[in-house]
Every structure is written in structure tokens, then in C-alpha cells.
Length: 114
Image (cartoon, rainbow, N blue to C red):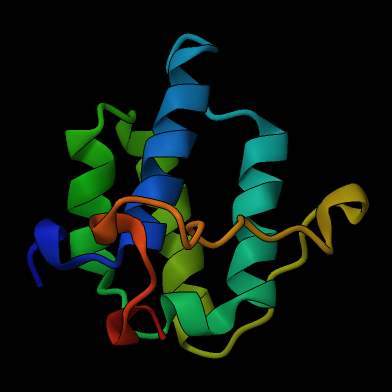
């Protein structure tokens, strides 16, 4: 799977995480990690067809440091394998928003997102 074939919602999440990491000397903070874990658990259908290698490549292309990418890709692999991830309590109900219906066509949900 090429990184261009990632669903728009996943690309948006990767871009968000990379932007947040850049704000902290390219280190992903614990709360952003917790948000990612919570989204993996609360919106499983978003991640079902996401290839870990394509996810990893896109994260690296966005400039994220390897250590953070390794953690994120590891959690993605565990979630896809049916394992349960436990984010910090204050983020357990968190999920990244779906692209708005008024978004550009490339950001609207498609059947690939499910």
C-alpha cells in the first residue's frame, strides 16, 4: 500500500500528530499518544484497512522522529491484531473527528475509510 492510498482521515491524523510533535522539539507528548491510542480503540473501523508500513512511511515523510513512529506503528499493529490499548483515563473516550461534509472532496469519507 502506498502512502497516497491511506484514507484521508488517517492522513489528517498523521499530519496533526506530526504538527504537534514539531511544537515540542519533534517529540510526541504523552497526551497526543493517548489520543492516538484512544482513537485506535474507539474508531476501530478507521484503522482496519490501514497498512502499518504505509502508515509508518507517511509518518516519517511528515518528519516525525523514528522513535515516535515506532511507537505509533506498534500500537497500530496491536490494535489491528485485536489487542486492547489503554490510554490515560482523561482520553479514554477521545476520537479524532471525521472530515466534515463541507471539506474538500479528498477529505470526505469514502468506502475506503470503513
